[in-house]
Length: 501
Image (cartoon, rainbow, N blue to C red; front, side, top):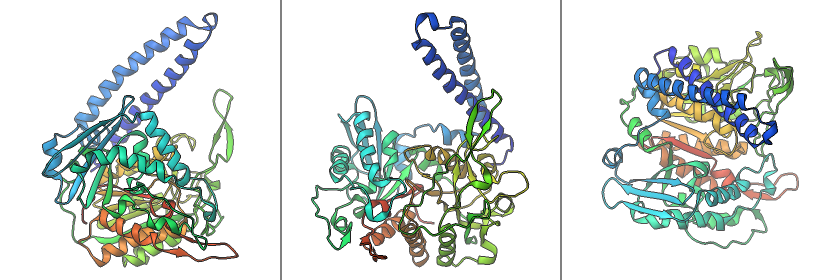
């Protein structure tokens, strides 16, 4: 758990050095590509010298983090466990699949607690993987569109990924009821739940949109699926002490009020979680840059209903455990004893460093304090939290590992929440349609409330399968549509420990 206020300062320093190196390399690249007479040898030499100095500072800072804050160091630069260590924390019925896409090909390992270890070196290069994932995400993250006009999901591309990456190592994972996936790069941007386990040809349903996709043999029908940032993460999470059995079921923060504008329901459209750059300001050098005016951050539709539905499903105390509107504030988060709750939920926007003046770390946008300050819950703040949570739910931007800047917000925030003491995150790969998202998330916790022995991964799987079979009836002359399109049932990823509460 985070117990040293100096950790935030050390992390920010490390981030600043890393960003400075990136900026210097970009400038150097442009200078080196310029014509010889336009190059500036003295400037180039000074920059190269500064980069070398920064690298030495980074080495020293990393050593300091490892010495003073070993738990956090293990999150950001995990040391790979031995095979014996990884197998030791696997439970009966679980299998781990590790995939690494490289320039020369993709390497895949699969193993259970006991039995054979499967390995394959495929010819599918990193660029091919990226192209296939990008093709699939076009149907899953199409922008702010009407859900009766979604792009066609490329079943052939998805089935190719399954056939080339998972079939060759089937002896290491088939038969498992829980699949733990460690993937890098583009593969981390795609939930393996959407991979068909066989070739399928479908014909559009003339009466109900997307209903034909109910017949696809999705991988999620075979096994529950959990994402892991590394094999080491599972080893660390399963060493956490047993949770306090007297915790309250749920605390939720949602629909924070940024201004007097009220969030309107967007049922039937994809919840647009992107924040446009709403204004410009002058920086020190006199140039203009885009930035966000806090009072103009758009409200998130339906997040109030989402928090209330979760509270009802989990029998939470609405007077004590629900914070909405002006009450969904950073101040209330910091003063609440979050260690007393099994599930902690945030339904709001995620912001990146630089989105708001003076903020250099990923943050969650909470209610506007209206005192001239912003209401951001920053990584610094999260590192100071004390959690004993089975889940942290982040219904925010594309928070799992999506294609775009939103993923960077949770890559930092997620590490912060794990460090603070959660066992698992529920985060989104792409913006969600509000009504189906509410059905999916509440379905997870309703199932666990009914059956407390149900694992997190299996509760998510069952909720996904249940949502696939639901149909939203036609309104205002539109066609009825099924939730069988993976945009509806596959956006949420379970990251962390797949086990029971």
